[in-house]
Amino acid sequence: MWADVTLRVNPQIQRGDEIFWMFGHDNWLLDKNTEEKCEEESEYSDSIFKPKVDFNRQTGDLTIKETETDHAGKYKLKIIRNGKASFKIFTVTVSGQVYKSVLKGRPVTLKYNTEIQKDDKIQWKFGEKLIAEMTEKDPENPQWTDDEFRDQMKLDPQTGSLFIQQTRPEHSGLYKLEIINRDYSTFRLFRLIVWDEQKSVPVMMEADVTLHVNTEIQTGDKIFWMFGHDNRLVDKNTEEKCEEESECSDDRFINKVDLDHQTGDLTIKKIRTIHAGDYKLKIIRNDKSSFKLFTVIHIGE
Figure 1: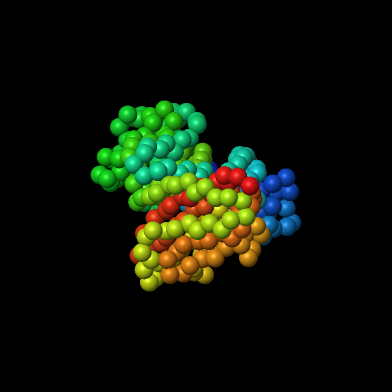
Figure 2 (figure 1 turned 90 degrees about the vertical axis):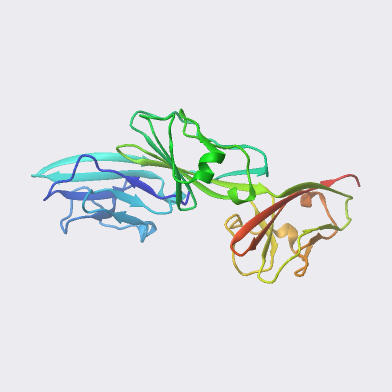
């Protein structure tokens, strides 16, 4: 989810070809390179694709940007050449980000459980920066674009999975895997968090507990406290939204937490069973992020 996907026409488009891209069993029109209408094309358009698609009029390829679950389904390509029509169907599935976390200094693998096929090309990006590329012809010798990544990471020649040998806080972020073949691209997004610190916090039922940042907060620091595997926001000191933060709110923390804006510490008042679990702290300073993990555990009534 949120990755771009490109559906490739193959073979080469010729001058005069009429190209139609449609979606779903109703054949909603996505785009075309002609004013004419094809027989299969629906009378209706589909607003979920505006402005989500880019149509390359030279190659005929269609790119769906920042895919969401609504964009999963069958895409139909029709090409009319010299009065004769040909068709292709592309089935797009949309999966969510894979979240991985690890304590700094430890290894982690961003795993893709599919074997690389003949003619596949593998690309890994960190954010928007290309860091590695591998082809099936020479899988043992991937091309790295940066010495830092080359020294710290390895690619599995069979699956294309990315192995980070010794994680550092600066390795936290979004990793994008793209597997490119002649017809389409497959994408997978991995969100990696490297914890600077990880600690357990025991607490009695109905007691208050304070999670201490133990880092001097500076003017301009952005502080985010999140909870659970889906990173539901607990509190923050900014109107901005961080990349890891869930779209969903969590009623269990209403009137239950205090954020100290000077120290960044978070106090959960009168702890109950529903408040036990993982609390994640993110601090953004000068566009660099650091993370801490606090696991709150009940130790009795």
